[in-house]
Structures are given as C-alpha cells and as structure tokens.
Length: 388
Ligand code: BEZ
Image (cartoon, rainbow, N blue to C red):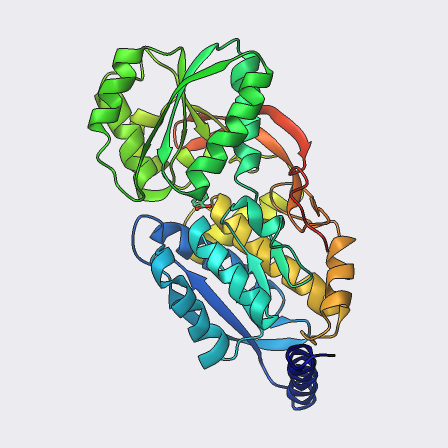
C-alpha cells in the first residue's frame, strides 16, 4: 500500500466512523440541493425541488428513518461556478447526499466531486451521457434520462413518418450535442439524413439568423433540443417567423414540458418524445398529480416527476441500509434490483444507474402534452464504458 492509498483508506475509515456516530446520535440526513433557481432553467429547478419535497412529505418527513435537513445552492446553470458550488455543499455543509442538477455541464462537475469525495449523488435531470457511463459508480444515480434517450426516440418517430431531410438546431453544449447525436443515430438508421446542424451558445436566444437559414434550406422537418425559458422563446419565434406552417417542428419533449402556458397557441400540435406526458393512465400518476396540484396549486411536469423519483431512489437505498449512507455497496444492491413506482410508469435502473424506460410520443393539445403512442418501448441507454 503506497502513501496515497493508505490516506484514501484512512479517509474512508474516518467517514465510516463519522457516519456510524452521526447515526447513533440520531442525526438528521443532510441533503444538498444544487439546482438552478435563476436563469433560463430556474422553473426546472423549482419543479425538481417540489417533487422531491412531495415524496418526503408523503413519508412523514423522513427518509431511511432519518429526518431531513436541506442545504441549498443556486448553481445558475453555470459550469464555470460548478466546482466551487458543489464544494460548498460537500466541504462547508458536509452533506450526506447531493441532489442535482439540471444542466449537463454543471452535472459533470458534480459527478467528479461526488466521485473524488465518495458522496452519494442523485441526478434529477441533467442528461450528460458520461454520468452513467465512464463516471458511473455505486454512489452515482440518475432519476431522469440520458441525453441520448429522447433524441433517439424522436429520431425513430421522424424516420417512421417518412421524413427524409432534416435540419437540427440546439444549444452548443453537452445536452444539445448528445441529444442531436441520439436523434441522428435513429433517424439515419431509419433512412433519413441530416443536412445541416445549427447551434448557438447556451443560453443565447437570438434565433432569428438561424431561422432565416432554415427557411432558405427548406428541409422536410426540424429536430430541436431546447428547454425552459429558451424553449418558450424558440417555439414562439419559430411560429412568428412563419415556419410552423411549412416546416414541421419536432423535438425531445423538453421543448414543450413545463412551457405550454407561456408558449400558447404557438405550441399547438407539436410532436415530441419524452419519458412522461400529461395524460398517462396509471394509478401512481393520478395520485401524484392530485397531490402535486393540491400542494403547489400547479400542474406537475417531467421535472417534478424526476425530483419525486430522485427522492424515491434515495428512500429505497437508505431503507435498505437503515439510513447509513456509508454503506454504498448495499445501497446500490437495493436500488439495482428495485422497480421504481414512478408517475411515468414503473422503471428500473441499468447497471450504470440510468433509467430503462418507455419513451412516449406526445402531441400538444391545448395546455397538455397528450400521450398519443409509445415512441420507444423500455429504451435503455447504450453501454458507455461503465466498469462498476
Ligand atoms: C441538460 O443540460 O442535460 C438538460 C437541461 C434541460 C433539460 C434537459 C436536459
């Protein structure tokens, strides 16, 4: 054993002792919420926290037998501040578990910090493919999706509709790049071709020049990834530019989730694919939607579901280890064999801890993402070099 490995072993032993002593004293479970509360993804962060708190309330305020104490950081969806922000939760506040975040670039920094410090991390949105690939581990889980999944499902839908020539448009960062990659894979496999990939920097919403380019290219359809405030503006601008009538717009479902009030008639009729929708017919979704509407006077969206399911995953793991977060292998064993009773429909986690789940085809009807079919059944993320 060299000096570095013996230091790591000492740190792990100290963490075990600290965790056992905190448990013996009935210490609260410290949950660190690192989410965007400002910027284009602010509403997504709020919905995730709402969903998480709803599950906690249903459990009488305890997870794994422990009361919960929250620490919160607004990550502003800014990767440049991510390491400093996550260290506030890990080093300053000494959290037992990290819940976050929305933005893929920020989530990558969180996953690295979680790995380096052996802290439990549950990602309630960000789809960065690598989090449940090379970054995987028995302390890292995702309750949402990989960026590849909704992109791939939408590519299958568009190819099956006989669309041949598509343009893609998205923000230039991991979520946009990986979403387009998934889309292209399925679309090209189904006989389509992508004639132009347009991008703009995150969170820029100056779409006009790119919309003019789309009008000049005249593709059969457009595939897009935008979410939050940016998705609202894109859908309205696409309509205002007169493109909606002539060039059908498709997207991963973030384009129209949690955004319909603000998008109004501009979103009417749009087709998207996602792992949730507003008209699912299962008992869990019905009780979830009722409870959410009663508590928050709002309809839930996919982000609220993912927050709720992050808390469910934490509950399943912590119940198995009687609240002892240091027992990572036992926590993982319990979660890996669980069927998670989600409002989206029951799902399991892959070996790399990413949901294996149905992708629904949805169409906007009024203020709803109405489920009109299954785009991809039990869609599992491709293996991405997870060695655990
Ligand atoms: C992401 O950055 O991974 C992301 C952000 C919003 C919605 C979906 C994905």
